[in-house]
Length: 593
Ligand code: WT7
Image 1 (cartoon, helix red, strand yellow):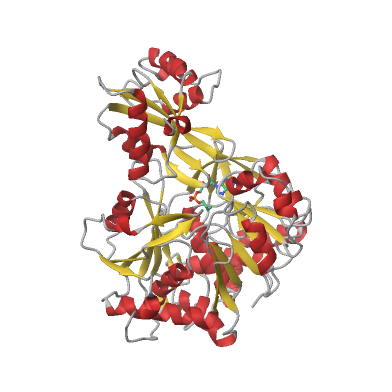
Image 2 (cartoon, helix red, strand yellow):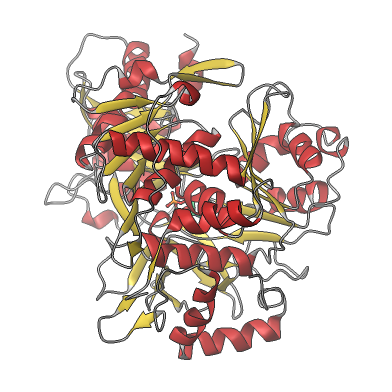
């Protein structure tokens, strides 16, 4: 199954040749790779020019490709190795055992009346059953909707109801960093009559098992995932089953140059797209062992990742810059005490990686032998779009080259995609070029990503809309209105800076700040915290009353030359903002009050 892919992403000349061909004849490129999929009915070609559809006429099933076929061939090979909060919390799930768990969950769902096309919520931490739950949905043609276990009851309720989910798969609680995280208190708060299926004691569940697979065609959906856009509500992204599977698996195979005996460890969470594409679907599709971790990288000591890599003989490790930066602060000994010599490839995803983190990752973790795959992509793109070539002549912190079959361009500093690829989400309009919202620079060979251009903040690789923050802050009685902008943060990449206008009020500032923290935590989750708050009498606005956020961004970032001041109807507000920003309150201190 793993053929001719190893040099495609390593050698500049081979890359250039395949790339040029793939842009001229994308269908040929993709048709070559549909051979990795086990089909019930193989499509004639990857792209049907007349209907403009991917894999038209093809019939297969994502779960069959990720589980059944490996359970038949390699039943005892570990599919998932799980590590929990304590160092000896370890479980190994073979492909045959994974098939049993998936079959059980699929049977439970069927017994509860779940049919093809129904939406199934999954609110679970990184345990093998969570991955099995996703695969069980795929098996019966249900559409999974994973909600990050760190999201609040309100964020959970919004997603379940707006996607019209029929049931919620969950467990009561789990441990992270030595503390219990209670999920049941959140799902108990749900006001809807959604059925809750608790997967905590799966063995005790009595249900008649059914092995039936619901075969999927090119139009069927695999999952819904919410991400942040620039409007107040989370943005609903839908991915189709088969074209998405083709894209994530082909990118995985070629970009990481996988080999059959690779052990793969990605530290993301199924609550995000990385956990869908590159923890669950791509590695299992190729029958690789995927290592998952539900604990904290620094608990009980700051060497959890390195210890797992050593113990499991991990060869490909994929993490986020925010994790690298926080581990970089600890003594090198935490890394060097472990034998990481089997590591072959290192990956980074979620936000731009800065040079110092890149260097530490390359030298200290990779011992200067592992290329760093700085992979750029988005929930909307399904899988990796840009990555550096795997040669060791890499440029630190430069994402690199577009994947085969993808035509990128930079227009007014924004990265755009000019053609169609199988991983694109269904919700994107087919007639338009695909706008990424990210700034990019081209150096003649490679693309460097500079970060978001729109009203989205990337906190520790978690994409959050400034509008979501503002809605949460504006709910507080004492607040008249607010504007939230991004400022850089040494560990988290970016953090939120809130400009807040108060009503006449009698409450003290520390109390109001506590309310702000509580409201964003309740409405979005603990990751959504504004680290800085500045109180202003007024916000700069255009004549039509729109808040001029980019000016506030300049002010919060202490930039001297402010752009487009003339568009502001109340220029005094800019002066107020400058003074307030210089006296902004740092919220982590306030938490201790
Ligand atoms: C946004 C997408 C991609 C899966 C996880 C996040 C930023 C992502 C990189 C990178 C620079 C990156 C972009 C993008 N981003 N990877 N390698 N270099 N920026 O998916 O939540 O949809 O967020 O993350 O700003 O638009 P997401």
